[in-house]
Image 1 (cartoon, rainbow, N blue to C red):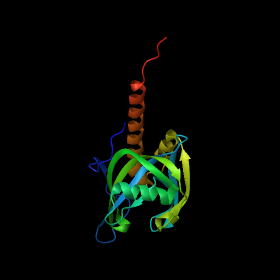
Image 2: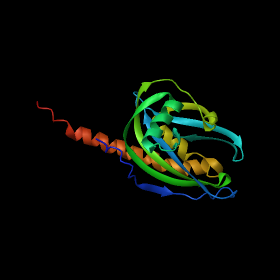
Image 3: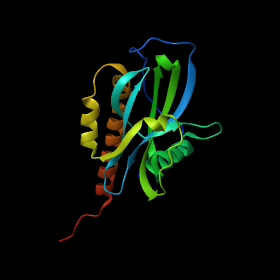
Length: 192
């Protein structure tokens, strides 16, 4: 079984924004995000469409959002999944932390990533300005998601998201494969 979350997550990567000029003093934002699998073995992925200071782009992003004051990353992730996906989720484990920045927003992010499964549909209730950028939520096999990220352009906001999220999907894939291998080893052999 995957280890329970303990918020002593490893930092997987740290990225500087080399795509846009900085606009002011840096602010830090803590964000809870994750890889969510549904009962059909498909993974949730937002298609984001924006036309703003970053430009006119479409790209993909994991569910998640800002951590409220006095809220743990795990609790924030569960809340964000209810808001954006309409599902309560069970956290299966931690994936890790990605630190990145958005120079146009003068923001440095600490992204806490979890692996979770959708358990109960409770209905979406999008509440933040960022939620309005979600064009739609897709449920796809992992290999299709990896292909979508690998084929994003290597410039602008899509590149920043690709750089942040592709390592998370690859680590989630490794965790799921390790879990599958452990479960198959735990099964007793068939006796003929």
